[in-house]
Length: 324
Ligand SMILES: *Cc1c(COP(=O)(O)O)cnc(C)c1O
Image (cartoon, rainbow, N blue to C red; front, side):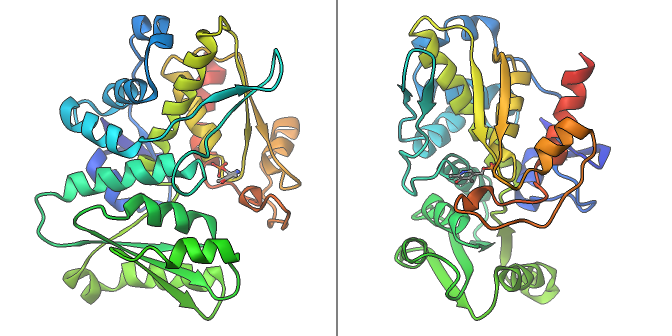
């Protein structure tokens, strides 16, 4: 599979390049060149399969030409080693529990899959892969636990002093092994600026093999499609064929993965993007104007995003959906 940039449809980079560069130079986001359809027979019988079997089928449909299936199976089984059960609240409403991974966030799907993809592509390199990540709290923990003990990798997390919660600080700083956390006397933006400075430092990049574990990495988006298919499989085994997904949204990666799954053939009646007061997307859906605003702090801080970074991906997917 080749990947283009949402700012340049003629770009065609390999999966490996898209993973290690994270962002195209034109500041767009990587998207798969075509969106392959899952085998209809597989979807017809989907209730027979486990989360790991579904993950392998989806991953090999997208990436089968980049990574041989036996290798992909090892990556999937190692990364997705926890469950994602659907629990019914009443006859018509259920929740998909995505907190059974090591950091208790759905970001474990993305972080664990991406770390193993990076380790796989670096296997033949004898240079250590240095992963840099700036965090305001939540992403750092999932990335740290995603890479913990993954051979050939070392993670450096930069976090703002006094600005992450006590639990988050413990998640960042108590891993040991190949994870180190640096407390920065400054804000999240200062942490991000230091990471950017490192990537732009030619001398440093000659010595070290640096990469980012940015949340918009395509290798974090793909594994999030797995649990949409698996949720549908669990509903089907209960005799339910029609499903509406409501997704609490911040950067719109989660619901973006849902739309990607839909484009790959998952039958979904519709999606509801739920936001808090940071409602740039819902304002867009009612007015047709995309008008980002500075984010407003709320209790649901993972959803406090005024200009969702994955929106360009959704637009890209929706153009196709709305046309058809
Ligand atoms: C990350 C996160 C979100 C936002 O997800 P996006 O993919 O950024 O839309 C919402 N809720 C929780 C609990 C999260 O951890």
